[in-house]
Image (cartoon, rainbow, N blue to C red; front, side, top):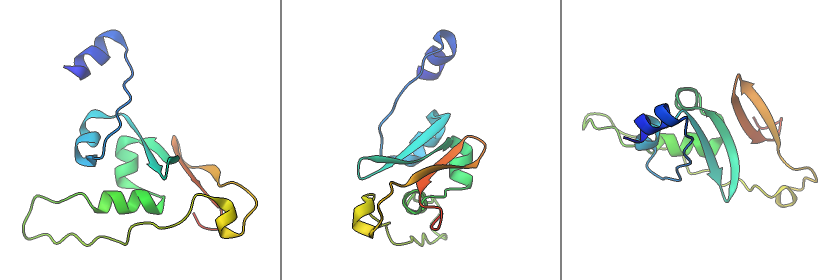
Length: 111
């Protein structure tokens, strides 16, 4: 129903969700937030195919696979800080376009 309304009326929706398997099916673009800051934005399939930010990678790795023979091996949850002063840096993380329409916030030496 929401997709029909979106197509008919040209609507844009903003969903805030934790269920990334559901988000994949209803979104054209996804933004990932970490500690209240946006850290990655990309078209849906690009984000799932090529997550760049460590927090995005950890979130996607945590999605359960509905196959009992597949063992989910999750990387540790990202513990980096979004506050540059906590890392001895004066500059804020910068936004970088890593592929067309796929942006990630970070430091060039870490992305």
